[in-house]
View 1: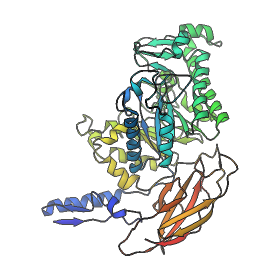
View 2: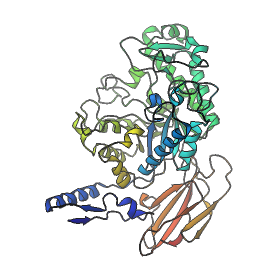
View 3: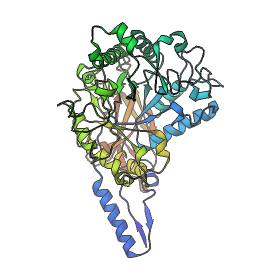
View 4: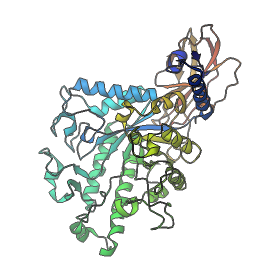
Length: 530
């Protein structure tokens, strides 16, 4: 029996070819299978919820030990660039609007730098540039912006080497200042208690921000390393730089070391380029309630505050960071660290700054011993939880490579439902709350629409992207309804493709976004037949 189901009425170019696959025509034999199929679609359609117009949708691209990119050391320049564009195209199709790219995994660089050597994960040899030469970070930024996606440069501030015998370049800062380096477990780290290490990390960040057109600096959960059996070896630095702290208060001293670094980084970023955001992605638990009445009702084995010496909510309160992206890599209903409980705990600690949530697609597995991770609706349910919490405005997913595999239909859930409409990255009014100028002129020629803009007086106000709205003539247009967003583009023109067999009239409107996602007044419509 043939069953044709058309669930999509939103006007989109190539609507039928894109949105109705693979579900447009379903062939099943037997009434029972047909009824099950109808039931599936009715359930799916009923679960479809309105999408927010403004939402952060990011994916981490890890480079350390070649987790996501490059797929292995020593790839040719052409192969590396091909992998970049393939990754970006994949995530653009999934509805993502930001990439969090690891550009400094171990005091090395995925960009040209006079401060640190080229990463070994590029060519196989630390200090060796790509050949033929190109600058990977610059390439990532250009290609991300071309697709209307932000590029957040992800750095690990203190990690120096994944193994103590990793061959370091002769130019590495570790040879110039061996007193800055400590071995803990099987890794090498900068000692955060030494003032010069904080200054050096700040120099590195300032250098990147000043030379590259990136959108944000991003740090993850690695401050002081996760605790091992032995104590972190900072006895010497404590004796030299304790600032009056007593030995029994070494935890407070370590937290203040990280506080100082975070504030220095934010000050440096904002002085250099005030529109560049600063975000932190901490471990998912600040403190357990057993250790602090302000903590979450969880029983995490490690916490930001007590083990990583990262007092993340203080940074939110002080306005030292622009967004917090806790890694909630647990399932809904976990008995010790429940996703929903933690999402609601973090929403109460946004303090007027942006709050997003990190998810774990890497845990989805049909053969997982944890039942919930074998169910295809675990991550969709997490997205729905977040969309019911006004203080949380988006998600990020760890990590890119898992989207190439079997995520039990999660990719289709994003494309066909949760991320089917493009989303504007939420604005940050504490950085800039002035909308840019609206478009100066809008012209239609056949199926093509072009527009002009007014000259901007500053970098903060210049046109950065354009939101294309479309609706059928006679349909009531609503500016806050994400269903009317056709696309978000960089160019000043768009050519529409045929939507219907019989042409209908549509209205097209355009607005301007600045670098921080402030939106201009929406233009008056032009009409065209598609």
